Length: 63
Image 1: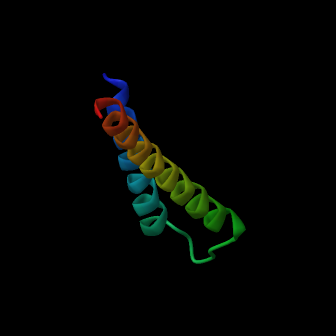
Image 2 (image 1 turned 135 degrees about the vertical axis):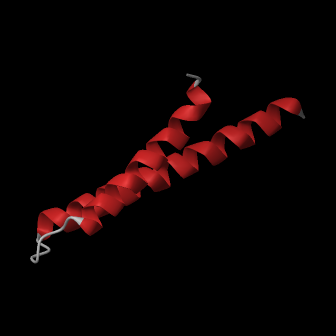
């Protein structure tokens, strides 16, 4: 597995976890539920930022 694929794999896993959390939630959506949602969202945003940063570095090296 290449290091370039790791952010995409983490984004996919986080999206699956968010979907599972939404489908298998209890009637009470307590603080723990929302903290998991926010944490997964921040992981996804961080990975998207990292992907963009790598693309920008690759373009700068080629110029």
